[in-house]
Amino acid sequence: MVPTVPIRCPKCGREHVYAPPSYPCACGIPVAPPVSRDASPEPVTDRTWAEEWITARCAACGHEGHWPQPELDCPCGAVLRIPIAGTGTGTETGTGAGAGAGTVAGAVADARPDEGSDGSDKGHGDAATGVPHGHPSHIPLPRTAPRPRPAFRPVTIRDARDAVTVAALYLRWLGYLNTRSAARRPPSGSRIAARGMLAQVEPALRPTTPRDIECLWLTAMTEAGDTPVACAFFTLAGYTPGARTRADSLGVPLFTMDATGTPQPVNGAAYELVATGA
Picture (cartoon, rainbow, N blue to C red):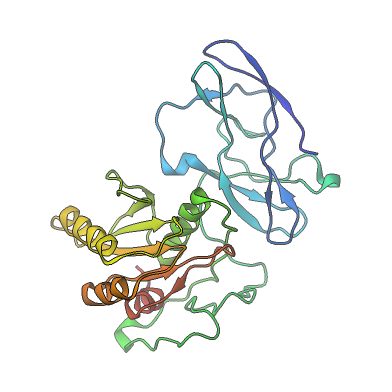
């Protein structure tokens, strides 16, 4: 059982009994961040991508998974960021209480892709390129030879927020650092911005259409200015034939995702991006 802690809202003074959510590690053991009993929660006024995620280490297997920063909604309207044990800001890596119950965790603020302890790809694809086994491998030109890259560590997708998390981690794995929520929201789904990249994540259970591809491409071109901005699309429900044709003509990389949390390239532009990175 996850230990609970008393949380007092600094705005209205109301006390809450809070238990941090736990998430399943790839090994099957639930992991939850150890909540600090000493530090006071902070009202959320401004959000940044780095503050939205923590990295929790599983004591059973040592794998570091990336999960949302613990928060609590107070009835007074305040959204409280819950401090993590060891610091007042939730930037610690270590083990938490409750190991006997299989809930042990630590946290760091920056979400980043991890490498397995043995450097293997755990059966998710080629460790050098990330291309899944059983798919046609892309052979890049000499000038686009892939740089060494650790295997991408997937995160289980259970909802739309998890899908955005996986896409952001995958972009960081490709070399697009400092991922953040894009300023302009699309009509459907979410967009992630990084230096030189604008990506859209569509968790809806409908195939992506040519219009979706065109809107993303036009937005990337509009925001490019003097610095070229690439774009990529991530979806859970796949693409219509027209969308794939339009993406090929515009050079937009297309990826699909499933519950395992490993994006899969589905067109030539996507294989090129996986092979070369940012």
